[in-house]
Length: 108
Length: 188
Image (cartoon, rainbow over all chains, first blue to last red; front, side, top):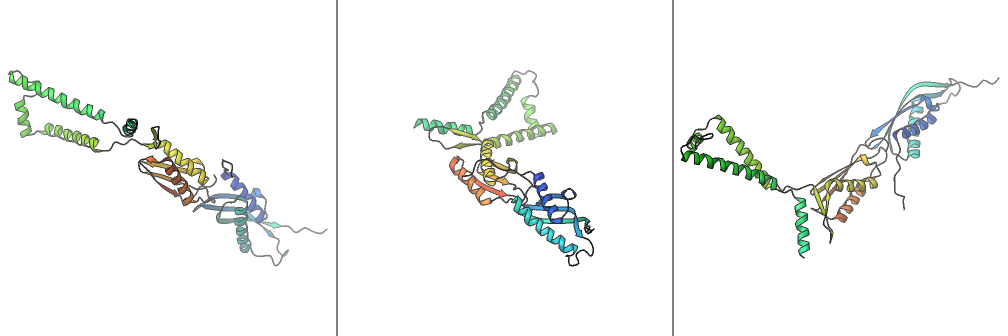
């Protein structure tokens, strides 16, 4: 027995959610992440513009490249956004607007 | 028994537009024309000056029409066509009868559309402005625009609407068509 009435999720709420998910997977602060949502054949089309967090040169020699990590981030964003919002995610477009380099902590 | 007949009669009258206005206008024009022709005939018989044109001259004008006469005839043809159209067209009002054994129930099509739209939006789980319903005498069309990422099950919407149509048992009966738009709108 379901209770009469309905739940509505505003576009702003969905965008905030997507921003949070994207920020987590890109390893940057949510305030640097811009997300726009639109529709693609009835599914969510997510377009993210954000910087990408990258280890400093030499800090991690075996870290995957930019492209590979971006692709991984797109897949993770799609999966987690679908899981948290319950919406079907059609496409995720990621535009990397900058690089945030992890400054290695000096042992002093 | 007679009560049933009265009910049927009343429902029919409410479902179709009365032609009395068209009849009143047409007969008024005919009687005015006849009165005028009679006046001219009497004036001509008494040898007085005609009001506009003597009957003899009028007949001559028909045999050899001038521009204004042709224009007048064209207007008359147009009026005649309109009259035929009004007479032949069904003159249905946008209303439906809902079956009831004791009461005569008439529902405006706007109300019917609202009812079908409500059913559709509850089943589809979309806000009211994403459901567009049109009601014609024999058809109810429902168009749903889903929220992006939340697919709408077209068969269940159609089924719910069909069920409502069966429940209401309108006269004339309506067929239900439900469409779900392939593209959605973000947010709900």
